[in-house]
Length: 112
Image (cartoon, rainbow, N blue to C red; front, side, top):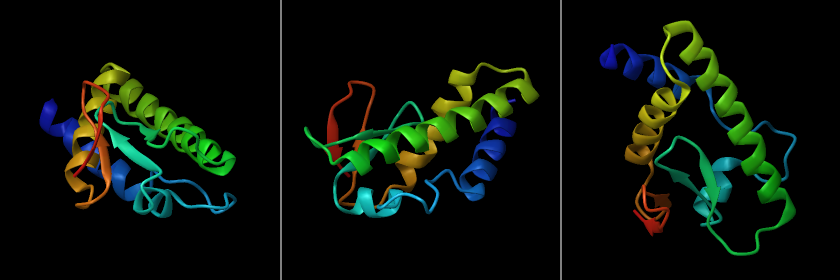
């Protein structure tokens, strides 16, 4: 079952768990600028103390989209949403390029 979940998560990643073009800044740009990072729980978070409004909006949109995708997969497979999110979070953190931010279970931001 865990192997199957990993495959589903990889498909989700390739389907594009990023923000749409309507925002002023893309998820990749925000990550590269050190404004946003990946969290171990499968969602993104704001790294800086006082982010611009478009960055806050981006994080909310991305997390909303991710939650919807995780929920779809969880319901289809009969597994908890948290399990899908956690596996995806681990994969997203592994794929995060050096120099960008990730937050582990302790919630502390670290440059990878």
